[in-house]
Length: 414
Image (cartoon, rainbow, N blue to C red; front, side):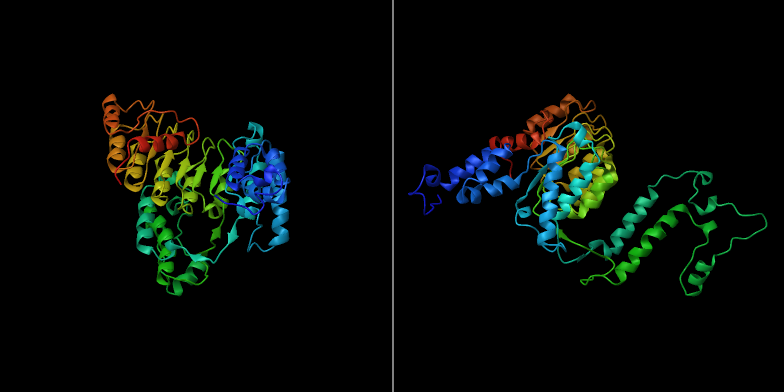
């Protein structure tokens, strides 16, 4: 127990141990005004209560978010106009939750601007690092070819981007433009548009910059391929049903959210591209909720688990387009997974459930409630493995809390 020098003198408040003060202030976290009054009581209380007050700000309406963002922006401009360091109060913020705002405020596009301001004030630019994909030419080229072949192919008449769909006047031969002719004379190789398959066009466009980057990699000095790195104290972000924060805004903020360990994007109309963009930077992610996201497909889930391999809790409740392909990707990448919810996902079958059950040794909760294609026999197999097959998943990360309780009762082998 920490003992202060003034514990045996003065009032009863000054004699109270620091640990008890901290516990009391933690209970006052939902009551920001009361906690703010405690900060102004004395220097000792200020020292103990200030980190609690700033750790998890509470917002009841959009005007409080505006006031909070304005105060951060003012302090940021006074202390660090060039963004190399942040305010000492900003460094205390660990959680941002906007799901408690009223629905009109959550759907207000101005919320995206305020979130951008807050995150920019918290992010600190560090030394630029060279992107790993800049020299991984072989793997990236193979991935580009694989994805280019999976692109939808239509008739030539319905593909205005294809060279074969461009009509030419009768009696004329296709000629190269001046720009292409100059490139051809300099020794670069050009392909005739009328003989190139659509897959080759996509592969050539994607593999050419990769080959150029891999020739000069690895590089440790800032270059055109180096990406800025950001550090921040933000660990948890709750944007549940915040439709005012558009997908484009999240994609722009992705590099500055690299320090997140908990992310809640439930009910936000997120797309596969947005999830893939966020996954490129969030390697520390432990818990993520994408529940009630009807636009999410197997591709978005596969991109997420391919990069964020440390995820322990994944909530895909009511993601109606999820099928066994996503389940196989989860099984092959998330070895530390302990809680997964695919409730109301009609595309999930016994095959995908069996793959996840056998490949994830730490799994304690696999919520398959209302999965019509999961048989009772598979549910009994889950129960025999001491894996919860049905639980309440409407509260944020309730499956994770349930998994921790299950691990305490039936510990899994490490």
